[in-house]
Length: 633
Image 1 (spheres, one colour):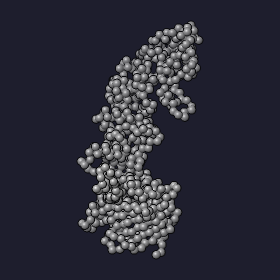
Image 2 (cartoon, rainbow, N blue to C red; image 1 turned 90 degrees about the horizontal axis):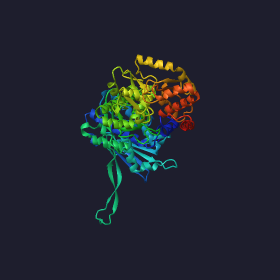
Image 3 (tube, helix red, strand yellow; image 1 turned 45 degrees about the horizontal axis):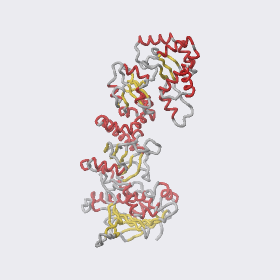
């Protein structure tokens, strides 16, 4: 029998396909099972099209067998089988797909039964990743003849007539010997094979069966001396029907919870389950879950986002990051689609319009579900926000605010008036008539924010303040800039918009009258502040810092605390002094009597203002000595 050469490709190409296209050698099992499923689908569809009533889905199965003694692994199906010509065409030409041709031939009929998986004719050759020789015996349905295709790889193949019982295809792999780098024995271990079927092919619609080792108590042995014997049992390894393809009436929330915990290794029920199914331009089914709490590594570089991606029930990617925006990276779950464009290895997606449509649709659905939870299950949403609110805030700020409109209504901040978390919509709904700004204060804790001197006048006049305690908070609000045409304004801003015209004139007059003193204080601080002025926001406190320009005092702290930040960033600092406080009277007196001491007072007031803002003084020792000098006098 003469050996035939592969028509399309050289040894180099086949080596590339075997050694480079697939990331993991275990993928071969997924590919061969998918091909077997396709072969059954084709026969079943043809039987329906031809009016043959003798076949039903329950007649079909895929059978696996592993023999450690002969180092062979076998996969059998009772599908359509192949003639010698089809073996020549489909297996003799690399990248020739019978499944793809079949799908194209019947795609105009738009029948659900044409849900074949293989489309590129490459998956079969993954068998050579784990085997040194492949034998394919195939008998077409309704034929008396069977044919055998054999190959050891790129050196070619043979086709000959053979004996085979029943229609379908039987593929036998001669598993390679172990090497220092690779353990091929795992593909002869029934338990390992069972795990791989569960991982990749659990939702193939036909039963995948295999003889599995088991033990049982020997009959007749005494109870005090039990003896066990080994035996084999033919088990169905796959569940066949995915939970997301069952009718909703057939699945309880407890079923979803159990599926989530087993599938994603969580010990808590999800906060919310999201099921969505669409047809049309983006055809897919998705089952998503909002976890009860963040994984230990969620806010680290080690965390990998993404949804499991299935194509017609076959796992293609463990984590497809392209299906989730970063702001919703906490979502866990899966997507199953019949018509994604996959590359030849089925391990990577082509970045096409279909994928983007699915991702966009999921984004909108997740947003809708979170908004519904916020409105209807507030306590549950606040618990969720405690875990993942930081990610939503990062989402507002990242990518130059690309997702800010999507996320702004999902944000929560602590309210000074309500003494609890509030949305931006709730704040705006409570704003006083003629209130210009949405006020906020930044600090490490709510308690510290509430004690800031800059909040005094706002609270006295009954204005609500949002207390921001996360580093990202102010960056997010700066990116939003406005909410419902109301601008955000920090309590540390130089202008809070509280003064009427007469107050503005009065404050301007006071600053003008004390211009020389204020200029002296500014000069005494030697460039540490842009300006010293009398404040319109302080009531009982003597001094505070405010800022001008794009960088606030809080942003300065956050940016300078970032690792690798060599060049320090400084906001434009303004020292504000309370003209009604006794300290200001002391400053006026010293300006007339002891300007050297006044310089010392200026430094003390500035450092005091820094400490109030949570900023460390530049020279703590000098500050401590200055306090001691004052105490000693």
